[in-house]
Image (tube, rainbow, N blue to C red):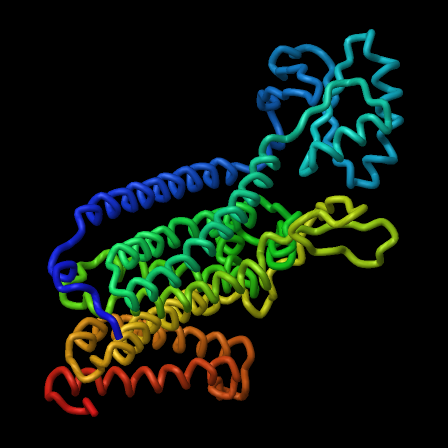
Length: 439
């Protein structure tokens, strides 16, 4: 197996500090985006106003006209919230236009606000019913749709970077070219902030009731509290796999920010194994369980269609409410159980990557990789233990099982890796302290 040249092993490339600085700037941008999201969620928490003076707003119509509500004080203003996919809206569209034309000379003002719709469909709706009063899009719902699109783009780019890091790292280690390994490291560090974008997009969509996304429709509803809506990120398969990949990318990023001096020979293959695993999960999210699939209505079809891109002859579908989270999952144990469990499972990727790298390079009997991974193993084991306790309490309270929560197949599936991890942690400590169990 080829190794990195000696002169490259002993010196850190001058570009490393600059590349890490760039990555840290990106991470700072992600933190700023988190702050902006939190500010937006706090504002959204205010909810609708049921009495008093109507809040002022400015609407820019599809035709470029602008209207501000405060300029219409003293006049009769009728605001129509509509959407091209709304059947009652289509039934009343002609009547509203007729009423507008009848009373517009008497000072009555009509304003149409297009809610959770696409501009193409909205313009076709206006043309179909020959609507002449000002109509414009609801910017809030457009923001949610744009954020979902940005989240999907971030997911695609994260997959590309992850795949590149996997290939570049193994090539650099095999051919002894450190600049390829350094490039793979930088690409790996970028995967976590890139995956943060789709995670934030899904959280925002859950909080703001963007039921046009099939995942949001399946796991949330107006009846759920804001806290439950946010934790619905891991309330279904699509969100759970995305959350899993995000945590795994975070672990890999933290490991690769550390100094390489002691483990420089292992790092190409550590990156390869860790990023190969991460790429697999990102690929699952992107190609199989994509949370950005939307609901579409195809005329004549008996069921709604779920697709990322608009199918032929399909119209966007925006339900008034979602199905809501499974009642069995509305338990404090299930709020904390998945994150702690995922932290445990994804944390074990780090010792697994180092162990595989040691086997590939023929250094499995050396102590360096064991010393490096002991704390990571302990960290993952602790969170997996907490996840087991929370899951067991949930199963006991909600499912019953006659008090024997261990018969729950999900808990059993978690228990087996926990037992294996316990044995591995014990053997690692014995190897480190007494030099035993190396063969």
